[in-house]
Amino acid sequence: MAAVTSRLLSWRDRLVALSVLEQDALLYLLAAVFALGTISLAVSDDYRQWAEMALGPYVVATVVCWYVSRRRARRVTVEAGRAGDRLRRYLVLGLLLAVVLVPLSVEVILRAESTPGAHVQNEVTVIEACADRVAHDKNCYLSNPKSIGTSVTSQSENSFFPYLPGMIPFGLVNATSGPPEFKDARLPLTGFSLIVIAGALLVADTTSRRRWRIFQVVVILPSGALPMVTGGDDLPVIALMLLGLALATRRSAVWSGVAMGVAATLKFTAWPLLILLVLGEWDRRGRRAIWRYSLAAAAVVVPVLGVGVGLAPHAFILNAIRFPLGLTKVKSPAASPLLGQELVSLFPAAKPELITILTLVGLVAVGYGLLKWPPSSPQSAAGFSGLAMLLATLLAPATRFGYLIYPLDLLTWAVLLSPFAPRAAHWPQYAGQGQEPLSGTTNSRSLSPMTAEVCPSPASEGEIAGLTGVTTTPTSHS
Image: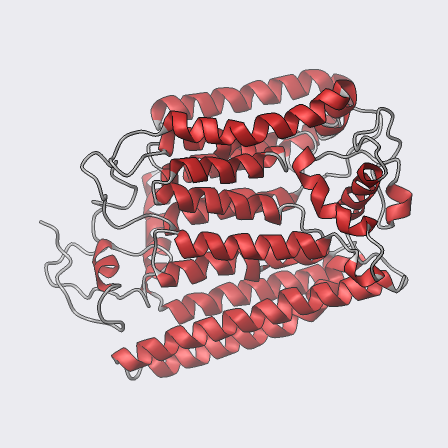
């Protein structure tokens, strides 16, 4: 175990030693490899179309970041650091256009023109079909749904709706009388997500460099760009979760509860963080704000779910609970060769028992973790939620690789949203404060935020407010 830990720390130190542009180059290279693999291996047409459009921009961004970082290594100045920051932002905004907005526009137009092939994921048409029923004064949740939906909205009229009522408004655009290009539910899904993410990053208690890194992971890299272009139903949930965390770092418990409450009305995937964030809410005086957060969240969740459940309890349970768990005759399309899915496939006759056992295993593991390492801050709540959702994704009987974006984003936020110092006498110490410096020497080479953005050391955090570039400063805290 010690050898594994040592190896992990060694890799962590190597990543920290890279400049931010070199880190960007590595991320964009991995994105390009993912796009290339998607072109070769993806079954869905819309996935391949996105990858074909995104591969070139990712490769260009990789080359530009690497080339500029090599040139900057020869002349380290404050102005060069600022120029590097500007380049990063231009590349991120360019990639927003090249790998998100342009591919999304192409897919929407191809779908509107009924071009042969699938240009949208089933979840979009399911949302649209549900909204169509609501627009005609019908219940979104069918008592006897027949299908899982297809890429054609008219063929999803009798489909399951495995979401919560808050997702319905995103599909109402399909019930309007506008041009078909503007009736795609991905447009409000994407627009809402980008606006909320931008707002969350503006209020987040972190540095500018970290904000851009979060935006990269949530939107620009394939973890955000691919689902946003092809489906998009998870992105509003993730955006609201980020907003809830960002407000919690500002110790705004009520508004954090409102944001998390809205997220919890969209999908159950927001509920782990909704619940665990109770333990990480504090007010501006350094006091726990459990009740204010809980009441604010409940004020949103209870009436919305009350409407969904109250109209037809059986239909709601059938669609939103039993179907996602794979407990209906019509099987969920979610399938990936992960542990829970494989066990259910190997022993189909024992499916109910296996689901019970896997659920108990997950609950015991999470319960033990809560007793051993209870979250005490928004960041630790995000980290714990990320690990819990990773475990849930591995054990779930109906799961898919795409659900891994939740633990990926949550663990990223747990690192990059950490504030640098408590602002109240009773404010809990965050993960990362008081951590040992990377080097034990008294006058080691401290790397600025340009070289320590993924896991910055305490010394580099202090330099963020000062000069950019590489400086030589004491890093010993003894």
